[in-house]
Length: 324
Image 1: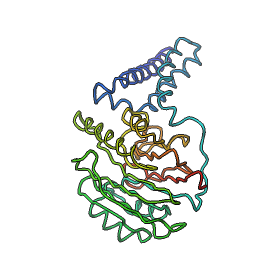
Image 2: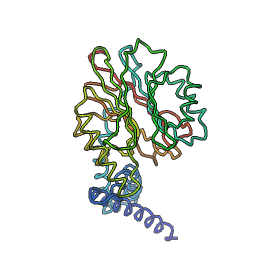
Image 3: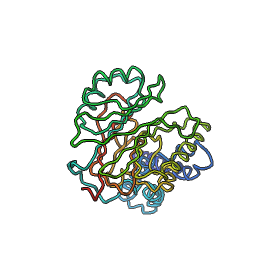
Image 4: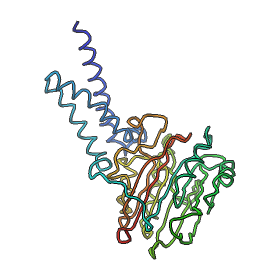
Protein backbone atom coordinates (compact mmCIF):
# COMPACT_ATOMS: atom_id res chain seq x y z
CA UNK A 1 0.00 0.00 0.00
CA UNK A 2 2.97 2.29 0.54
CA UNK A 3 4.51 1.55 -2.87
CA UNK A 4 2.37 3.99 -4.84
CA UNK A 5 3.21 7.10 -2.74
CA UNK A 6 6.89 6.16 -2.87
CA UNK A 7 6.76 5.88 -6.67
CA UNK A 8 5.06 9.27 -6.84
CA UNK A 9 7.76 10.75 -4.63
CA UNK A 10 10.58 9.24 -6.66
CA UNK A 11 9.00 10.37 -9.92
CA UNK A 12 8.45 13.94 -8.79
CA UNK A 13 11.86 14.27 -7.20
CA UNK A 14 13.52 12.62 -10.20
CA UNK A 15 11.82 15.10 -12.53
CA UNK A 16 12.86 17.98 -10.26
CA UNK A 17 16.44 16.69 -10.12
CA UNK A 18 16.67 16.60 -13.91
CA UNK A 19 15.23 20.12 -14.17
CA UNK A 20 17.69 21.34 -11.53
CA UNK A 21 20.67 19.74 -13.26
CA UNK A 22 19.71 21.21 -16.65
CA UNK A 23 19.11 24.61 -15.07
CA UNK A 24 22.59 24.65 -13.55
CA UNK A 25 24.27 23.36 -16.70
CA UNK A 26 22.56 26.11 -18.73
CA UNK A 27 24.51 28.69 -16.72
CA UNK A 28 27.64 27.38 -18.45
CA UNK A 29 26.22 28.27 -21.88
CA UNK A 30 29.16 30.52 -22.89
CA UNK A 31 31.52 27.54 -22.69
CA UNK A 32 29.79 25.03 -24.99
CA UNK A 33 27.12 25.27 -27.67
CA UNK A 34 25.16 22.28 -26.34
CA UNK A 35 24.87 23.96 -22.94
CA UNK A 36 23.56 27.00 -24.78
CA UNK A 37 20.59 24.96 -25.98
CA UNK A 38 19.69 24.31 -22.33
CA UNK A 39 18.98 28.03 -21.83
CA UNK A 40 15.78 27.95 -23.87
CA UNK A 41 13.34 25.61 -22.04
CA UNK A 42 13.41 27.52 -18.73
CA UNK A 43 9.59 27.76 -18.52
CA UNK A 44 9.49 23.97 -18.77
CA UNK A 45 12.05 23.68 -15.94
CA UNK A 46 9.68 25.75 -13.82
CA UNK A 47 6.74 23.50 -14.68
CA UNK A 48 8.81 20.42 -13.79
CA UNK A 49 9.74 21.87 -10.39
CA UNK A 50 6.25 22.98 -9.33
CA UNK A 51 4.77 19.47 -8.65
CA UNK A 52 7.48 18.52 -6.14
CA UNK A 53 6.86 21.77 -4.26
CA UNK A 54 3.15 20.97 -4.14
CA UNK A 55 4.02 17.48 -2.90
CA UNK A 56 6.22 19.04 -0.19
CA UNK A 57 3.27 21.14 0.97
CA UNK A 58 0.84 18.21 1.03
CA UNK A 59 3.24 15.90 2.87
CA UNK A 60 4.59 18.67 5.15
CA UNK A 61 8.14 17.66 4.34
CA UNK A 62 9.46 21.19 4.36
CA UNK A 63 13.03 20.21 3.47
CA UNK A 64 11.69 19.44 -0.01
CA UNK A 65 11.16 23.16 -0.41
CA UNK A 66 14.86 23.27 -1.30
CA UNK A 67 13.62 22.41 -4.81
CA UNK A 68 12.33 25.98 -4.79
CA UNK A 69 15.87 27.33 -5.21
CA UNK A 70 16.28 26.24 -8.86
CA UNK A 71 12.70 27.41 -9.46
CA UNK A 72 13.59 30.88 -8.17
CA UNK A 73 16.68 30.88 -10.40
CA UNK A 74 14.63 30.20 -13.52
CA UNK A 75 11.83 32.58 -12.56
CA UNK A 76 14.35 35.38 -12.12
CA UNK A 77 15.80 34.70 -15.56
CA UNK A 78 12.53 34.46 -17.47
CA UNK A 79 10.59 36.87 -15.27
CA UNK A 80 11.28 40.09 -17.22
CA UNK A 81 9.44 38.57 -20.20
CA UNK A 82 6.40 37.35 -18.29
CA UNK A 83 6.02 39.54 -15.20
CA UNK A 84 3.63 42.41 -14.62
CA UNK A 85 2.58 44.94 -15.68
CA UNK A 86 0.05 43.14 -17.80
CA UNK A 87 -0.53 45.10 -20.98
CA UNK A 88 -4.08 45.62 -22.25
CA UNK A 89 -4.69 45.55 -26.01
CA UNK A 90 -5.75 48.88 -27.49
CA UNK A 91 -7.75 49.31 -30.68
CA UNK A 92 -5.27 50.46 -33.36
CA UNK A 93 -5.49 54.17 -34.04
CA UNK A 94 -4.79 56.15 -37.19
CA UNK A 95 -1.30 56.86 -35.84
CA UNK A 96 -0.40 53.24 -35.14
CA UNK A 97 0.88 50.61 -37.53
CA UNK A 98 0.59 46.83 -37.44
CA UNK A 99 3.29 44.37 -38.41
CA UNK A 100 2.90 40.65 -39.02
CA UNK A 101 5.80 38.25 -38.98
CA UNK A 102 5.27 34.75 -40.30
CA UNK A 103 7.65 31.92 -41.02
CA UNK A 104 5.66 30.30 -43.84
CA UNK A 105 7.56 26.96 -43.77
CA UNK A 106 8.77 26.04 -47.22
CA UNK A 107 7.06 22.63 -47.04
CA UNK A 108 3.82 23.90 -45.50
CA UNK A 109 1.12 21.22 -46.05
CA UNK A 110 -1.75 23.73 -45.73
CA UNK A 111 -0.70 26.92 -47.55
CA UNK A 112 -4.33 27.97 -47.90
CA UNK A 113 -4.51 28.45 -44.12
CA UNK A 114 -1.51 30.77 -44.18
CA UNK A 115 -2.96 32.77 -47.08
CA UNK A 116 -6.36 33.06 -45.36
CA UNK A 117 -4.74 34.28 -42.15
CA UNK A 118 -2.57 36.88 -43.91
CA UNK A 119 -5.51 38.17 -45.94
CA UNK A 120 -7.65 38.82 -42.86
CA UNK A 121 -4.96 40.40 -40.63
CA UNK A 122 -5.43 43.93 -42.06
CA UNK A 123 -1.80 44.61 -41.20
CA UNK A 124 0.18 47.44 -42.74
CA UNK A 125 3.23 45.31 -43.49
CA UNK A 126 3.81 41.56 -43.72
CA UNK A 127 7.30 40.21 -43.05
CA UNK A 128 7.52 36.68 -44.45
CA UNK A 129 10.27 34.09 -44.11
CA UNK A 130 11.02 30.72 -45.72
CA UNK A 131 9.64 32.16 -48.97
CA UNK A 132 10.27 29.77 -51.87
CA UNK A 133 9.63 30.63 -55.55
CA UNK A 134 6.41 28.63 -55.31
CA UNK A 135 5.35 30.53 -52.21
CA UNK A 136 6.03 33.87 -53.90
CA UNK A 137 3.88 32.93 -56.90
CA UNK A 138 1.04 31.95 -54.58
CA UNK A 139 1.40 35.15 -52.54
CA UNK A 140 1.19 37.35 -55.64
CA UNK A 141 -1.83 35.45 -56.93
CA UNK A 142 -3.79 34.84 -53.71
CA UNK A 143 -3.10 37.99 -51.66
CA UNK A 144 -4.80 40.75 -53.68
CA UNK A 145 -4.84 43.10 -50.68
CA UNK A 146 -1.05 43.31 -50.53
CA UNK A 147 1.76 44.52 -52.75
CA UNK A 148 5.15 42.80 -52.74
CA UNK A 149 7.68 45.56 -52.02
CA UNK A 150 10.76 43.35 -52.12
CA UNK A 151 11.39 39.61 -52.18
CA UNK A 152 14.26 37.20 -52.50
CA UNK A 153 12.80 33.69 -52.71
CA UNK A 154 15.05 30.72 -52.10
CA UNK A 155 14.59 26.98 -52.51
CA UNK A 156 15.96 26.53 -48.97
CA UNK A 157 14.65 28.13 -45.75
CA UNK A 158 16.37 31.51 -46.36
CA UNK A 159 13.81 33.14 -48.68
CA UNK A 160 12.25 36.45 -47.56
CA UNK A 161 9.57 38.91 -48.67
CA UNK A 162 8.06 42.19 -47.47
CA UNK A 163 4.48 43.12 -48.40
CA UNK A 164 2.50 46.31 -47.88
CA UNK A 165 -1.25 46.64 -47.72
CA UNK A 166 -3.21 48.31 -50.52
CA UNK A 167 -5.86 49.42 -47.99
CA UNK A 168 -4.15 51.24 -45.09
CA UNK A 169 -6.04 53.06 -42.32
CA UNK A 170 -4.19 56.16 -43.48
CA UNK A 171 -1.84 56.88 -46.40
CA UNK A 172 1.41 55.00 -45.89
CA UNK A 173 4.75 56.67 -46.55
CA UNK A 174 7.03 55.52 -49.32
CA UNK A 175 9.34 52.73 -48.23
CA UNK A 176 12.96 52.30 -49.25
CA UNK A 177 14.00 48.65 -49.19
CA UNK A 178 17.19 46.69 -49.63
CA UNK A 179 18.67 43.27 -48.97
CA UNK A 180 21.49 43.11 -46.45
CA UNK A 181 23.60 40.31 -45.00
CA UNK A 182 24.72 39.97 -41.37
CA UNK A 183 27.63 39.54 -41.13
CA UNK A 184 28.84 40.58 -44.56
CA UNK A 185 29.45 37.50 -46.65
CA UNK A 186 26.56 35.57 -45.13
CA UNK A 187 24.39 33.76 -47.65
CA UNK A 188 21.23 34.52 -45.65
CA UNK A 189 19.33 37.58 -47.02
CA UNK A 190 17.61 39.98 -44.61
CA UNK A 191 15.28 42.80 -45.60
CA UNK A 192 15.86 46.37 -44.46
CA UNK A 193 13.11 48.96 -44.90
CA UNK A 194 13.33 52.69 -44.18
CA UNK A 195 10.47 55.19 -44.04
CA UNK A 196 9.24 58.33 -42.29
CA UNK A 197 6.23 57.77 -40.03
CA UNK A 198 4.54 60.98 -38.85
CA UNK A 199 7.72 62.82 -39.89
CA UNK A 200 9.83 60.43 -37.78
CA UNK A 201 12.39 58.12 -39.47
CA UNK A 202 12.03 54.41 -38.78
CA UNK A 203 14.31 51.55 -39.77
CA UNK A 204 12.94 48.01 -39.97
CA UNK A 205 14.95 44.80 -40.12
CA UNK A 206 13.48 41.41 -40.91
CA UNK A 207 15.74 39.11 -38.91
CA UNK A 208 16.18 35.36 -39.40
CA UNK A 209 19.23 33.96 -37.63
CA UNK A 210 20.81 30.56 -38.06
CA UNK A 211 19.45 27.69 -35.98
CA UNK A 212 22.24 26.35 -33.71
CA UNK A 213 22.53 22.70 -34.75
CA UNK A 214 26.22 22.17 -33.99
CA UNK A 215 29.29 24.07 -32.79
CA UNK A 216 29.81 25.76 -36.16
CA UNK A 217 26.23 27.03 -36.59
CA UNK A 218 26.08 28.09 -32.94
CA UNK A 219 29.22 30.17 -33.41
CA UNK A 220 27.85 31.66 -36.61
CA UNK A 221 24.62 32.62 -34.84
CA UNK A 222 26.72 34.53 -32.30
CA UNK A 223 28.40 36.37 -35.18
CA UNK A 224 25.00 37.17 -36.69
CA UNK A 225 23.70 38.59 -33.42
CA UNK A 226 26.86 40.67 -32.93
CA UNK A 227 26.73 42.09 -36.47
CA UNK A 228 23.00 42.85 -36.20
CA UNK A 229 23.47 44.49 -32.80
CA UNK A 230 26.20 46.82 -34.07
CA UNK A 231 24.10 47.78 -37.09
CA UNK A 232 20.83 48.31 -35.19
CA UNK A 233 22.54 50.45 -32.57
CA UNK A 234 23.30 53.01 -35.28
CA UNK A 235 19.78 53.12 -36.78
CA UNK A 236 17.07 55.68 -35.91
CA UNK A 237 13.99 54.26 -34.19
CA UNK A 238 14.94 50.71 -35.10
CA UNK A 239 12.52 47.77 -35.18
CA UNK A 240 13.65 44.18 -35.74
CA UNK A 241 11.24 41.32 -36.08
CA UNK A 242 11.44 37.75 -37.23
CA UNK A 243 12.61 34.28 -36.31
CA UNK A 244 15.52 34.92 -33.94
CA UNK A 245 15.99 31.21 -33.14
CA UNK A 246 16.62 32.30 -29.55
CA UNK A 247 14.52 32.89 -26.44
CA UNK A 248 14.42 36.27 -24.63
CA UNK A 249 16.47 34.95 -21.70
CA UNK A 250 19.24 33.46 -23.86
CA UNK A 251 22.66 35.06 -23.75
CA UNK A 252 22.62 36.13 -27.42
CA UNK A 253 19.24 37.85 -27.07
CA UNK A 254 20.16 39.65 -23.84
CA UNK A 255 23.39 40.90 -25.39
CA UNK A 256 21.43 42.16 -28.39
CA UNK A 257 19.12 44.24 -26.20
CA UNK A 258 22.02 45.57 -24.12
CA UNK A 259 24.04 46.65 -27.16
CA UNK A 260 21.18 48.25 -29.05
CA UNK A 261 19.07 49.65 -26.22
CA UNK A 262 16.00 48.18 -27.91
CA UNK A 263 12.98 46.87 -26.00
CA UNK A 264 11.44 43.40 -26.18
CA UNK A 265 7.80 43.78 -27.23
CA UNK A 266 6.92 40.60 -25.30
CA UNK A 267 7.38 42.28 -21.90
CA UNK A 268 4.00 42.67 -20.25
CA UNK A 269 2.13 40.52 -22.78
CA UNK A 270 2.52 37.19 -21.02
CA UNK A 271 2.90 33.69 -22.33
CA UNK A 272 3.26 33.98 -26.13
CA UNK A 273 5.30 30.98 -27.23
CA UNK A 274 5.72 30.52 -30.97
CA UNK A 275 7.66 27.30 -31.59
CA UNK A 276 6.99 24.51 -32.19
CA UNK A 277 3.41 25.31 -33.15
CA UNK A 278 2.40 21.65 -32.89
CA UNK A 279 2.92 21.55 -29.11
CA UNK A 280 0.65 22.97 -26.40
CA UNK A 281 1.66 26.44 -25.27
CA UNK A 282 3.22 25.20 -22.02
CA UNK A 283 5.68 23.01 -23.91
CA UNK A 284 6.78 25.50 -26.58
CA UNK A 285 9.14 28.48 -26.40
CA UNK A 286 9.16 32.05 -27.76
CA UNK A 287 11.73 32.38 -30.56
CA UNK A 288 9.84 34.75 -32.90
CA UNK A 289 10.21 38.32 -31.71
CA UNK A 290 9.72 41.99 -32.31
CA UNK A 291 12.17 44.33 -30.58
CA UNK A 292 11.83 48.07 -30.94
CA UNK A 293 13.26 51.45 -29.96
CA UNK A 294 12.08 52.76 -26.57
CA UNK A 295 10.55 55.73 -28.42
CA UNK A 296 7.80 53.32 -29.51
CA UNK A 297 5.17 51.56 -27.43
CA UNK A 298 3.18 48.40 -28.02
CA UNK A 299 -0.58 48.85 -28.45
CA UNK A 300 -1.24 45.18 -29.07
CA UNK A 301 0.73 41.94 -29.33
CA UNK A 302 -0.78 38.56 -30.10
CA UNK A 303 -0.16 35.27 -31.82
CA UNK A 304 -2.05 33.95 -34.80
CA UNK A 305 -3.46 30.44 -35.25
CA UNK A 306 -1.70 27.32 -36.48
CA UNK A 307 -1.37 27.70 -40.24
CA UNK A 308 0.69 24.64 -41.23
CA UNK A 309 4.06 26.11 -40.23
CA UNK A 310 6.11 24.98 -37.25
CA UNK A 311 5.94 28.64 -36.10
CA UNK A 312 2.91 30.62 -34.97
CA UNK A 313 2.36 34.03 -36.59
CA UNK A 314 3.26 37.14 -34.59
CA UNK A 315 1.10 40.29 -34.83
CA UNK A 316 2.36 43.52 -33.23
CA UNK A 317 0.83 47.01 -33.29
CA UNK A 318 3.22 49.86 -32.46
CA UNK A 319 2.80 53.61 -31.98
CA UNK A 320 4.88 56.61 -30.99
CA UNK A 321 3.40 57.68 -27.61
CA UNK A 322 3.49 61.35 -28.57
CA UNK A 323 1.35 60.52 -31.60
CA UNK A 324 -1.19 58.45 -29.70
